[in-house]
Image (cartoon, rainbow over all chains, first blue to last red; front, side, top):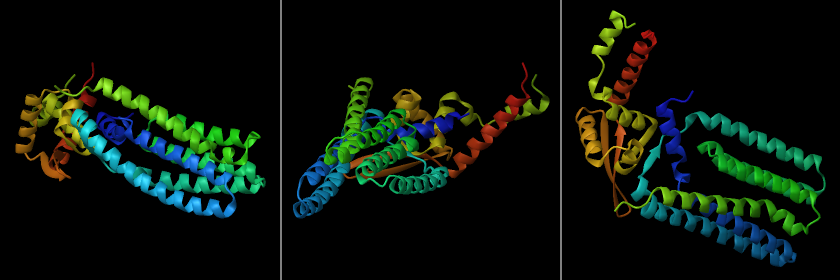
Length: 201
Length: 105
């Protein structure tokens, strides 16, 4: 059974997700990435390569900008309402993380080897990648709604592989689903946070 | 029933930590690296004056340390348990666990 000090520690671990800003920022990034992927698939090869490289740089700049914006929003909105906390480093999860990474590599290899058809394997792989990324966040902070987003990403990857949608759409679907799901869950979380923590008079 | 040993342990409990509000503060800080005043106030549900007074006592006893820093242009004061504070809290919990294990109703 978790004692009260551990409960406080766990609360501190998940505190950065309490206001929803992180999820909204990630949602925007994933949705943007899915749109870029769709555009790349629709272009011819030389244009797609140039576009892809530019898009990767834009995405990198966007993720840097997003982390700054999230930090500023937390300073202005979150820390003045419910304060600031530094959680303790979670040292016990290192082996778990290594194990999960090895499991991911093995499952990815199995997908590639067992499903020779690229149009089927890639959406499943993308779904797994998204599920693992969001699942990692969910596991670190033990947030149920993020497990749901991770499951949705994986399910969308499998669903995309089974449908006869155009290739670009099946490839981007897991990113798009994860992005939109994070945007929705982040917005709901932010609304709830602001309602429950009005600014002090 | 409380045995004679338990009675001695109860008498020797660290009274600075034993006070409920300070116990909550110590427990909270034991679970995290550091926290600012607003976070402690939100989590403990203590009033500003009450929290400030208890933090002052814990700081005077050397159980908590105060770190003043700047995040960009924004000043931030963080509270954290000192090594002494951590050790005393662990001792207190061990003593209390012993007493509670002895206690039968």
